[in-house]
Image (cartoon, rainbow over all chains, first blue to last red; front, side):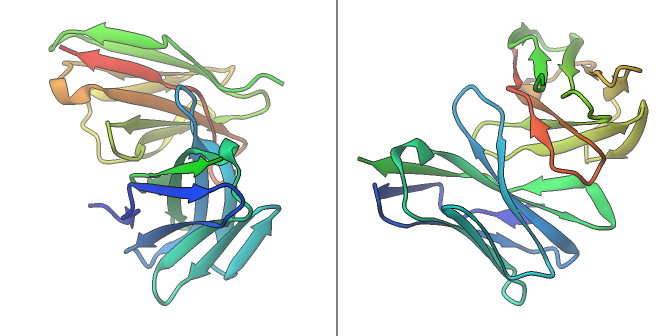
Length: 113
Length: 112
């Protein structure tokens, strides 16, 4: 049961432009959402998170937006840099089962110079 | 501060064998979670250990078992290996079960 879905396996953007990565979830019990970035031969690295009580969280060039009614979140990277090229995973967990974090399949972002 | 480390980096086993993977948690972290990442998929939660006790388990059969030691390092054991067990196994540590998890580089297991 894939409760967290990233429907775009890949995304390519030009350096300096905005990258928008999308994620949908089905479990209404999820109340905490995270984005991880993964480079080849490394483990996922935590990027940014958002609680369900918020609809936006910003950290430098990275902003996560949460639309609870649509069960949708997105990660915006502005401006995109070549070093941002990586696989990005969306993850979610619930207060009642907080050790079971569910991940999407990932989106490979390529930022072209 | 030492990050999360895992050993070995790569491993090749044959069907029916048993394997043990190891993880050293980040300094100050007492919680370790294990994930299986199959090719083209996101990590799937196997189980979590908190202060040497299992603290939650995903949808994996009992032949996947684990241990956590007093220094909070951890092992993942898989018995009776199957071809579908071929995957990247990731370990993540955190200060508590709800804190941000920090991942190791993973162990790539190939079952032939």
